[in-house]
Amino acid sequence: MQEPVRNVPLGTQLADTFRELIVSRTWPVGQKIPSEHELALKLGVSRATVREALRALSIAGLLEPRVGDGTYVLATDEISGVLAREETSMLLEHVLDARAGLEAASARLAAWQASPHSLVELAAALLARTTAHDTGDMAAFVAADADFHRAVVFASGNPVLIRLYDAVAGVNAQSVEHTATLPEQSAIADAHARLTAAIIGKNVEAASTVAYELIDSVKEMGAPQDT
Image 1 (tube, rainbow, N blue to C red):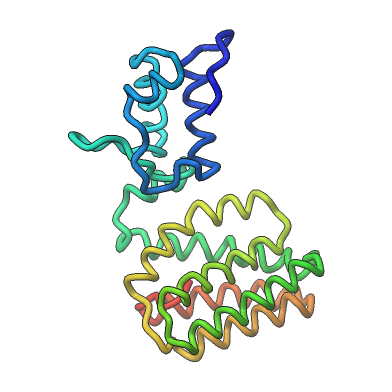
Image 2 (cartoon, rainbow, N blue to C red; image 1 turned 90 degrees about the vertical axis):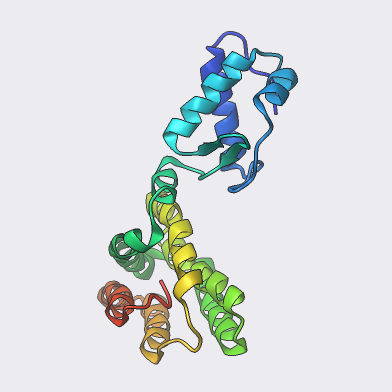
């Protein structure tokens, strides 16, 4: 952690410094950060200045102060912060709707312009997901499923879509952990395979259509085994 530069407002400088620690995962989500006193001593500033910076990030949704305990990292960006404060059960359908649009747009772009490396990563992600499913390891399956869907978005080459996906991925992963069952419905597994084939085969329209169908199939089954 670098000392703040004195020619800019210290509160703003500290907020930017703390934000970078959060975004870089130096302060990971869920971790309790150092106390105001510790931070003030380390940076050579007043506790009031530290408090101002922490309050700004709390308002933004990145930090969560807990009375009598301390301050914890809640999210890595403002969108995630808003979602993290909501009830997962109430958010899930809305998250799925948003993901459907994001993934359909991403799949379309991926089928059109994905790099050879991205296609290799996508195929590998599908294989890893299938392997985790077949071994019956729920934790590995949830992680592999998330990796697969991010590979689809990453293959689009669009940094805005990637950022938006990452913002909702945490909430979605939590819901999957609570609702997924193995084995999953065959229609969902088949949709993953068809989506991969459409992207690798550069079938733009099919990639977009299957991406929508995949999310719709999850919603229709009522139990979000995969997203």
